[in-house]
Image 1 (cartoon, rainbow, N blue to C red):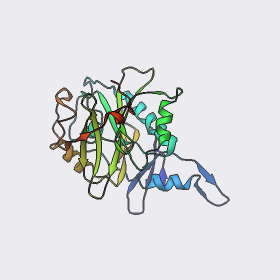
Image 2 (tube, one colour):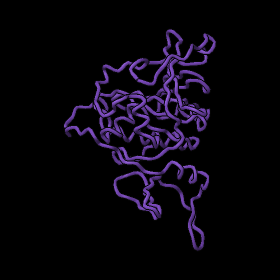
Image 3 (tube, one colour):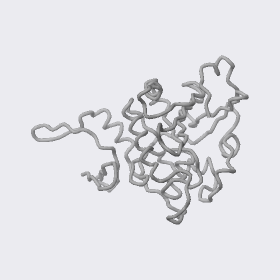
Image 4 (cartoon, one colour):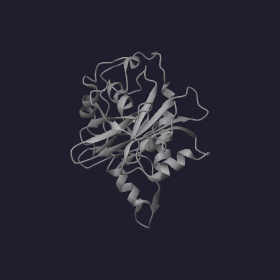
Length: 265
């Protein structure tokens, strides 16, 4: 059984045990007596991401709260989600402060100035970089840090849109014991590593009417990174290479490595 709710960009399915699932609309092929997804491989992959979670909403703010990123910007979140997914059926996973805002207050943190996602390293494809670099892309790719197999990070803004909001796309690597993503201090070539519990199960959530992909172990992920995630802390006090509770130095890139990257603010 599934429903097409009004005002949202996804379909809702209900399992026999009552579990709610959300999926982006997909093409259906009709046979004489039944219908089925036209791309069964994509459907099965998306189904594994589809269990729907609700935000905790433990921090409620006044409707007239001043915001660095307007709530209308969620349409650009959704457009980027679709752009990445259409490119190679990769899933853009909401992360860091963007995940915190969704779970803690069902919204965007008012004082945050950027947006964070990750793509699982096993889903990343060079096609994604090529699509972002294409002149016809709606995005300006201004930063390429790291290497595909080590601390990879792309950063984009949406062309011809104000305000300009930096959107970071990290690669998330998973080993037998942990998941991690990397960061780079350009001037020193210093690598940093954020470590998480293994992120192997992914779910969906609703961000102001738009489907987002999230780690299923949301609270565990947030606690590792922020400690008391229910408490609001000003973004201006956040220092990316030392404020997170799960970040550690992770060696240095060589000068030869750095020549393969792209610096941008």
